[in-house]
Amino acid sequence: MPRCANEQDTGHGLGWTAPSPFTIRLETPRLVLRPYELTDAPALYQSVAASRDHLLPWMPWARDGHTDTDASAHYITTQIMALRNPTAFTAVGIGIFDRQSGRHLGGTGVHGVHRDTACAETGYWIRADAASRGYATEATGAVLSWAFRPQPADGLALRRIVIYCSSQNHASRRVPEKLGLRLEVQQRQDYFLPGLGCTDRLGWGVLADEWDCAANRLATGVPSA
Ligand SMILES: CC(C)(COP(=O)(O)OP(=O)(O)OC[C@H]1O[C@@H](n2cnc3c(N)ncnc32)[C@H](O)[C@@H]1OP(=O)(O)O)[C@@H](O)C(=O)NCCC(=O)NCCS
Image 1 (cartoon, rainbow, N blue to C red):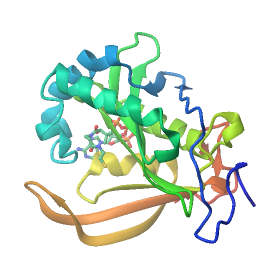
Image 2 (image 1 turned 60 degrees about the vertical axis):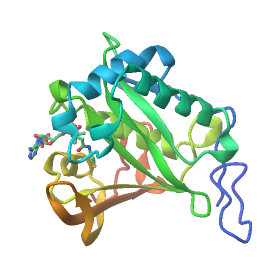
Image 3 (image 1 turned 45 degrees about the vertical axis):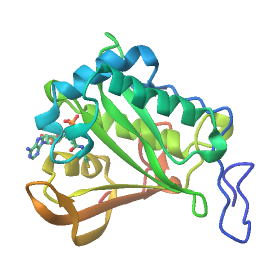
């Protein structure tokens, strides 16, 4: 059954397309998730600069990316341009902000969109001095609900989301585990990380029908992994 007006079997898959216009603003008890604006560049740079050791080796872009405010502004400009062209949409980076203070806390998003299956990937990072307070889990729950909501309800109407991480990334593993997602794959020695070499890639998946978008958690009755 189609999940959005533009989803149909084209003979080459479902032919999923992004909503147009493309708007994102997600609120959770403690967080606001929204696309970056150019004025966020200093805060984004500072979050990465203060967290490089924490982000590496898990996020290789943290080594050479966001080297100064201009580099962060360039990244944000690329994101803004991508959102203006939903027909070419394959990925979006979303900032995670403290709901009360507006402080930038980290990033998430959706990437690796497959139009034939309406599937995509999500990921996350939280600045070092805000880690281990449940922010990544809270943000990811909201992103999953946004990804699965029908497009007339300001969602993406995707069918499946997967989260990949290295078996060695114990903090990251806890996020899909706490959300109750199903561990679907363990690809042995498939994830190269500088300093750690080839590690196993773990993948957790969840389907739209298994997710309660109002509660930002697995639907009642779906066995938690
Ligand atoms: C992974 C990351 C996003 C988690 O963000 P967070 O807001 O701290 O996540 P949460 O607080 O929701 O959950 C973190 C869990 O990991 C646990 N944890 C943190 N550091 C850990 C470590 N070194 N070893 C084992 N568990 C750890 C926490 O105790 C918590 O689990 P708990 O709630 O059962 O106690 C954050 O650590 C980060 O940005 N890491 C660097 C970037 C990264 O690895 N991104 C993911 C790439 S796949």
